[in-house]
Image (cartoon, rainbow, N blue to C red):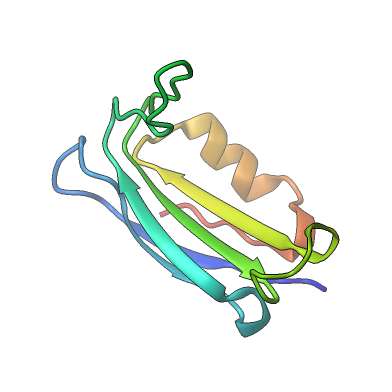
Length: 108
């Protein structure tokens, strides 16, 4: 299956804010879509031993293709992270290089 994810990013009011993102997911991939917002420097794991600290504010989308209650062999989850950080090199790569699954990236 080929899925097309389309997202539009607008600038946040403050650099510490997570990006304001709109993500449109095709229905087969839209099972249980959830959105989480994180600030720069936030620990994502909340674990006393391991720490995963964000280097920039981000918005994360999570979802599944098919039911979430599927067994491990048939569970197809996905995640899209959008960081509040502009990198000219990343924009150039995303807008010129071929991408998997026919995804298209556009610079704002």
